[in-house]
Length: 273
Length: 276
Image 1: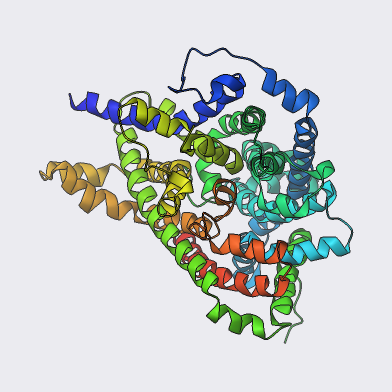
Image 2: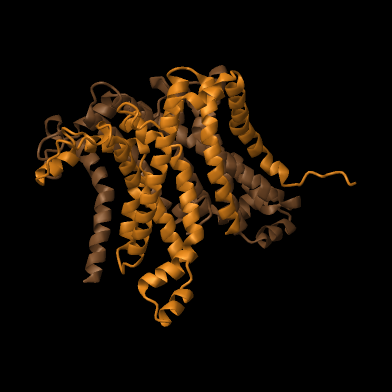
């Protein structure tokens, strides 16, 4: 009896979590006449892919999608290229007077800056550099945004690899860089992949910077494109929901792939769940 | 005194330091310069009623949402942890709200909340409730609560996930010892589990609080701060001041208040993380 109650409670939570998402999906599939019918149709409506076609084949959402993909990829690769060596440096070398921890804390604290604090200066800086409304400008900002996360996460992963592994390789004539590339990195590959996934998701979902730094169609990301349609006078709910569903899918796929490291990523490495 | 040598590891860290100096510290100093360019910026803060309203609402939103999310998240963590099977299914499903783009989540909730054709009032009416007075985000008195509800939906999973991981990391011996001593389930939870979970609780609350004080995306889509100023928050007000009214100096001045609030939280956060 008590078990039944527990499963009921858990199922209610599950329904509450998924119902809004499910509703968004139904709206994206319903004909316009059915979207706001009364009583609300949770099941058994005529499904159509028209809104997806309108959003992506005819509309501008395909371009937004492309921008988002490009941006997420570039900024993630850049953050990894710059951040992984730093993480290794903090994890592996002798630092006097705990400077490794001091630098590590400083790097993490930059991540804690509220975006709204740096966005005004960044906007003015990019405007001066003529990088407003460009993928490049936003990619630079996202790289800086994800970098502290990469350093912090990868440092934890590197510290879990025994030093003896690369010391042995270096005695055999490997250089430090060679040992990192050939011995250590393969060992932390799952951690590296999880870190990359987190950066991708952050860049993919980010809204505030994208809203302010890209105001032209050509550079808009998917979240900004969706938002610009919501704030219009007449909202095309079907098209927007379709775009929303498409924006949501890659994140869920990635998250499923990195589930094992989710807690660690979300807690900045503090909980090794 | 011996000449200071640069530690070997420094060159590995150097590029990151340069990037963060130019993308975080330089903008921060730039913001200081902007805000002090006009002395009036900081005195205006104290007489700006809208800033006071936005500040108060940000605090209310943070405290209320955090309290609800914590209680629900902890309850869910304990509940799911006690299930014999299906744990992975529940855990995975609960992740969806938190991982989807906040903009998309907010769009879904606009569809749900709409008083005339939204599914929430539609379903309630179908069940026989009178929904005439249920205006959700478009009602002056209910808007803030409706925004909080969306945040609870979206971020309770975060608390749940962290607390759940914390629960699993608790050693079983103290729990068993307490059981042997004849302690009841509630007593064990209160006197053994909770104290052991404390570092995780603190960490989760601090991380969430830091995000709540800067809340922007959901409100921007749901209400744009309205109706009137019912859901105006500090981030939204700063955004409008800078990018609608082009008053960059005043926006920068206001953002330092937000920064101060965040620094208090991040201080605590670093302390908790160090102690683990």
